[in-house]
Image (cartoon, rainbow, N blue to C red):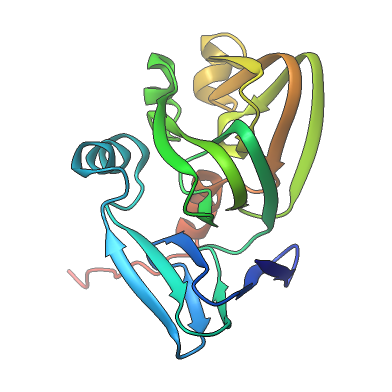
Length: 225
């Protein structure tokens, strides 16, 4: 498999060149374009129970699409649903934790599962769980906005809405950014305190903050009464 990430860091997309009979799996709706000899198979990855768990707890699709270059090589392009960057990570018998909606595509050998984010994450507005990607193979995940990789050694605090991914070698704890006054009046809400050693992938934009900003520009119909 050969690939190229284009449009970085604002409107990134992934161009993948598959050899004959080579496969790649992707989140539903991620395909942008493809060669006519590439065939698609849609199924519940990991079985019905695993797929339901991803839908209910992580907000991911029930089905995964697998694309195969039949008889000859072919090209396929993928893109995330929102504007931002795309990161490639080659896993070698390891895991990576992704935030809700960050998974785009990857090798069919990778296992995609949900991971409990702690009770406080219910109130963070970022979803109850993360996604756990494990195994060996090429993984492509996205961020909302540009991405910054931080090598954590010790403690580091990140707003829950700005987490794109992190390594499982890091411990994490979701907590208030300050006291009760700060929690409700500062606009910051809850944060994630990482501890240990490992990488955190931070996205420069927050989906919830963006939605709140965009809502201020929404046209509102006014009653004539």
